[in-house]
Length: 215
Image (cartoon, rainbow, N blue to C red; front, side):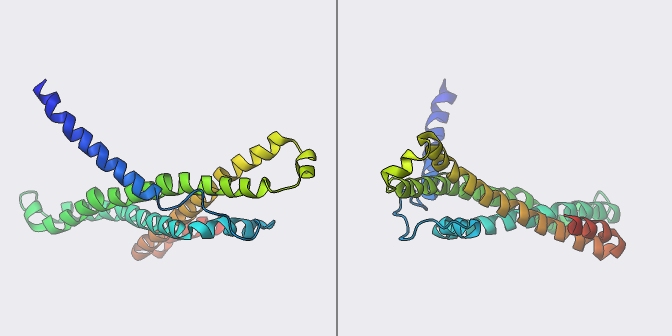
């Protein structure tokens, strides 16, 4: 019972701090912002840019977070190889004393830097973009649709119009997030793997280069 009394306030305080952090990211984009003066374009690229430019700083932050996560992930194979070299070149009795700066740096990257980068990537994606950008697209699409003439609604099914408004936001947001994260991760992780392999032997990098060309 005493342990439960001690843990309760701590958990409540941590929850409040977490909620405050979530609200900070959720307020970065106003989902009910007034639409731009021009209607959404009909061409696909222009249609994407019409909405993405209103959240361009969040997309840029997502790009930076994705690049950082991919770069930190690419260090894991290098760290494994480095640890193997350290174990083979040092005696067990003196390993920690002689190599603690290198091991400490690896530990800091894997235990501190990488989790922090992943946390920031998830906060930008799930708290700022997922809710804000999705509802921004929905709200502005609704704003333009309700200003159409009566004939516009008579010539189509109301359910189909409503479904397009509701589904356009998630589809646009998911394609932007997935495209940014997936393409960037492949380029950074694959590029770093190719460089590491080529540093040992150029022949080892040939399969990765072939995979890049095929994809």
